[in-house]
Amino acid sequence: MSDDLERLKREASERLERITSEDDLADWHRDFLGRQGQITSAMKGISQLPAEERPAFGQAVNALRNELQEAFDNRQDQVLAASLQSRLQQESVDVTLPGRTPLAGTLHPVTRMIREITRVFGLMGFQTVEGPEVEDAYYAFDALNIPQDHPARDVWDTIFIESEQREIVLRPHTSPMQIRTMEQVEPPVRVVVPGRCYRYEALDATHEWHFHQIEGLAVDTSITMTDLKGTLAEFARQIFGQERKVRFRCDYFPFVEPGVDFAIDCMFCEGKGCRVCSGTGWIELLGAGMVHPNVLRHVGYDPDVYTGWAFGMGIERIAMLKYGIEDIRHFYQGDVRFLSQFNRVFA
Ligand code: PHE
Image (cartoon, rainbow, N blue to C red; front, side):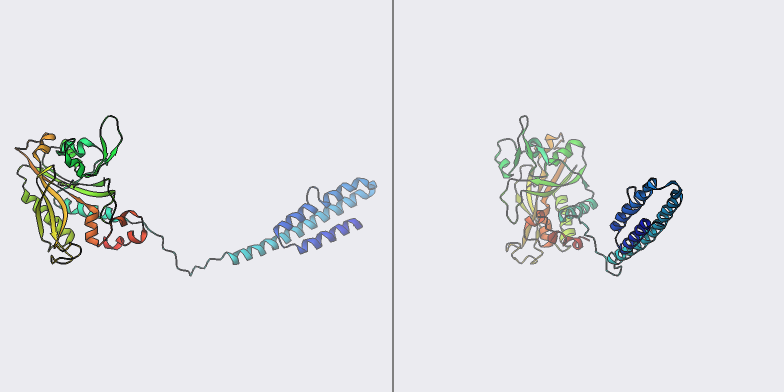
């Protein structure tokens, strides 16, 4: 072998031995075995040799190429094995660590309260229906015996939607669904209507600009106030305890006659008087009454044949009383510390 080839072999071998990285391996391969590498240029040098020396030189270069290729393959195996080994050490997983519990979402307390209340009324034969939150003023007021310009219209601090043709509102109560339901079906009617309501209201611990109500409606032949009291007493005892006493007092709503407010004895002080019941011993839960004959006429029910009653309650208020929540604004601040407390309560 010529001196040049000897030198080439020594240089290549020495460099190869020092290589520890894949990048250096690639450089080495390019410099010696690549298309522009030293073996290729040695082969090109053959043309300068006398004809009789060419075959021997050609064989020597080929032998050297094969030798270097083999040495390269071995070195490459060693380098890859070493780097795999160190990666395995660095990236190893400690399978003895405890797993992380994923955060599971839960139902909002208002959703759970709606399910609890509609379940109680469901057991008494009431179907749950829902209606639109963006409502025609006809359903929100007129058909409920609250004509345009009637002062009672101001009682519901309504949020109006701009509209050229008709008066459109965000419903301030669920009572419009009384009308929509009766328009759809003939008596007997027994429905409860949970849903979101909106009022233009100054916010404080008991007022939100949006909140939820559940409406109840029963219409049939010979429905009386006694049925109303019995149904509401059963509801109150299912939610607040079997020992609850109930109370009706006169109240005014344009769409009922007579109208009442329904209260239970205070479960915090057993009726003695405390902070929650403002010292009265009673807690007002909802408004109710016998459906006004004008309302029945509006939907084409004959008030001489059919009677009925309706009630409407604020769902947040029920949840606040049941679970001792002191501020309605907690419901809508999205604070997980508040919301997650209801995982267990409603199990
Ligand atoms: N809609 C009334 C309110 O929002 C409550 C109510 C419903 C009263 C049904 C009587 C009958 O205050």
